[in-house]
Structures are given as C-alpha cells and as structure tokens.
Amino acid sequence: MKDLMKITLNLAIVFVLSGAVLAMVYAGTEPRIRAIKKVEKQKALKSLIPEASIINTAGVYEPLPGKTAHYYVAKDKSGKPIGYIATSYSKGYSSIIKMMVAADPEMRLKGIKVLDEQETPGLGDDVKQKYFQDRFKGKTLDQLVVVKNTDPTKIQAITGATISSKACTKGVRTGLKLLMKTYIPGNANVPGNGTTAGGGPK
Image 1 (tube, rainbow, N blue to C red):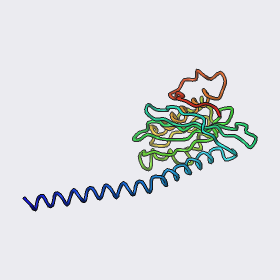
Image 2: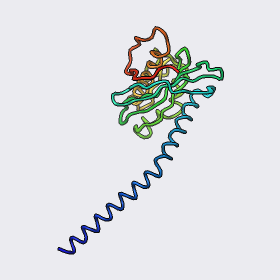
Image 3: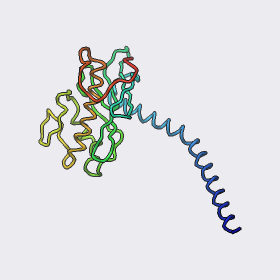
Image 4: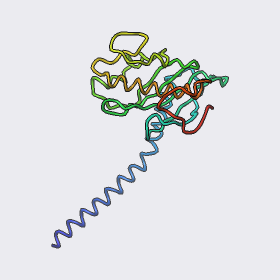
C-alpha cells in the first residue's frame, strides 16, 4: 500500500512539473510565434499587391459560420486605393481551406494565395500550387466557375480533385463578393456567404 501511494505521489509530482515546464515553454515561445505569423501575413498581403506602399486592415467579416476574417485596402504613395484583399475560408474535401483574395479597383482578380489546407496529398492539396492559383488571375466574379475542360475564361479543375477545386473557387467568390459589396457603389445586393461584422474602408 505504501509503495502504491509512493508511486502515485511520484507520478503526481511528474505531471505537475511537466505541466509547469510546458506552460513556461509556451509562455516563452507564444510571442515569437505570434510575431512570425504577423510577418508571414504581411508577406502574403504584399505578394498579392506588391506595388502597394501601404496595406491597411479595413474590417472584419464572417466567410464561414464561426470563422472571422479580415479584409484590407492597399494604397499607393499618394494614399490612393489601388486594390483590395480579403481573407476567406471554404470547406474542402477533407479540410477548411484558408486563402487570401486580391482584386483591383474594378474588382478583377489580381491573384489568390492559399494560406492553409489539409486536402488529399498529390490531388486536392494542389490548390496551393502556383499553376492552379494562376488560373484565377484576371477573372471577374462571373468567370469564377469550375470546369473540367480547358477554358481560359473559367477555372479549370485540378485533375482528380474537382471538389477541392470547387471549394477553393467558392472561397474566392466569397472574398470577392465581400469586396464588391464594400467598395463598389451599387453592389450592396451582391449575393454571397460573407457579411460584414464591423469596420469599413480606410
């Protein structure tokens, strides 16, 4: 009985010490992780509109239930808006796909960047590949339609990954619709999943 109590006590001490060590490690690394993520986000924003002198956070919306995301306005040296960016989410084949969507003032896509996904390796995860993301450049909202054949006016699906292709395209549509509602007069009634939840043009 005494041996059992001793073992239990030793285990309890180990658990407490382990928890304390983990807490200390987290406290020490969490600020660094936050800083790294901030830098990565700025790089992603800048890569979409590299000619921008400044990119400001303009507001928050909800592209998926329970998923909040930011949208941004990019300006040149004179302070004139030269483009807009929205972070968006969409439910893929096996994960939630997170992306950034950039548009010019006429709401033609400047590009997209997939930030996070856990789709099928070698198939659906190709949504993060440049060849697929390049298919969105120059497209308008009406052209964001996934097709299986080669059609330069639409979005050609990834071979064997139509669901992931459609999910990514849906997320792009959601982000672009939000930007159109926010920045293009007369587009307040554009249908879409995203709704503003605060903030505004800056």
